[in-house]
Image (cartoon, rainbow, N blue to C red; front, side, top):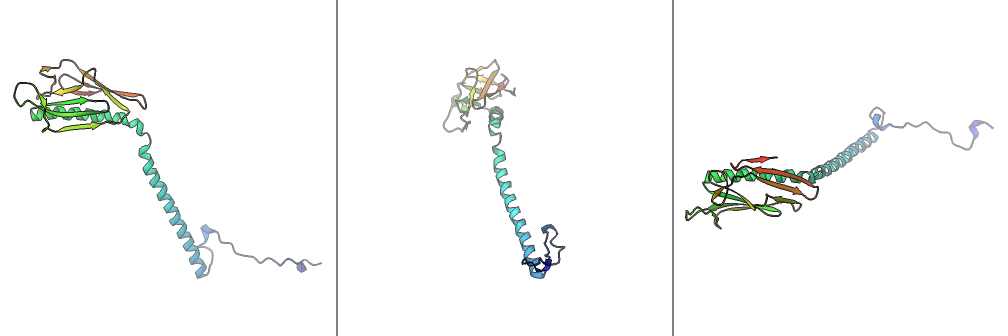
Length: 191
C-alpha cells in the first residue's frame, strides 16, 4: 500500500496569522480590513474597561482610611473656629462665645446693649452651629463654653479667666483622642 492511497485526504499547508504581526502577513484587502477592525474594537474594549476601573478607584480611594481622618479634621476645624471667633471678637469690639455640646459646638456673638457689662445672646445676631460626626465627643474641663472679650482675652462673664482651658476630643470609633489648649491670652494651641 502506498502512502498516497490512504483514505485520509492530504493536508494542504495553511498560513496562520499571528495577531501581533498581522500587518506583516500578506492579506487580501477585505481580510486585512476585518483584522484591523478587530484590533480597533479590542483597544476600545480595553479603554472602556480601563476607564471603568479608573472610575471605581477614584470613588474608592477617598473612602480608604476615612475613619482615621475624622478626628484630625474635627480638631483642625475647631482650632480654626476658635481662632476665627477670637479675631471676630477683637475686630468687632464684642464678645464671642463657643459653646460645647455632645456632637456639636455653637459660635455666638454676644452683645451688651444696656452697657452694664453683662454680655448676652440676641436672636438678631448670627449663630453658627457646627455639627460633628456622632463618634466624636468634646469635653472642656468642666466648662460649657469659651468666651472671648473685645480684646481677644478669655473671659468668664465679667472676670478675666486666669487658667488655661484644655479641650479634649475623642473618637469612640477608633479610640483616638486629641487636645487643644486655649490660653488666658486667647491664643489657641494644638497639642
